[in-house]
Image 1 (cartoon, one colour):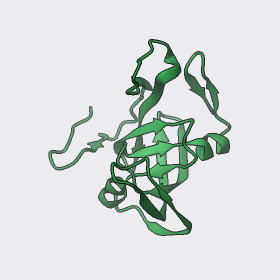
Image 2: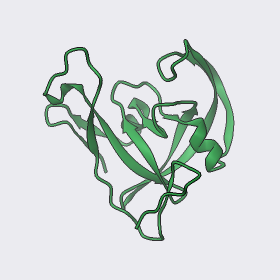
Image 3: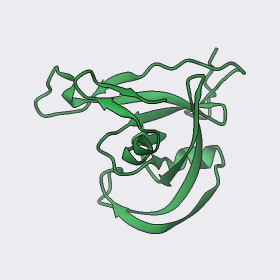
Image 4: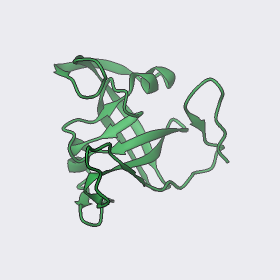
Length: 150
């Protein structure tokens, strides 16, 4: 059973592996369409026995982890070898991404990985973009709106 601590947005797993279901969320569009063309993948994963929010984003060129998650779980951060500026993650004009982090993720019972992520995001705890999808050879079936990977 999952319980939520009062001082954080993270959930403790009570020694048992939880099964997660990918939930489809609608993006905010000017003309919302009922087809799955405008939906993104929102799910959960575990990082150091904490349940975290996860987004699979086929359009993102980066894997990104939130500063909140790295600070809370005390994940090791290292300087980015090729820092860059990005403007669509945060509400401000643009930010400079200067750090990397190896994030140990567990999805369901059987999939675990260590994903290299850029640090600094407000959208969710972890965003897995095309680099992760390439590394695990994930297949996105856009008409059925599902991801398949082993």
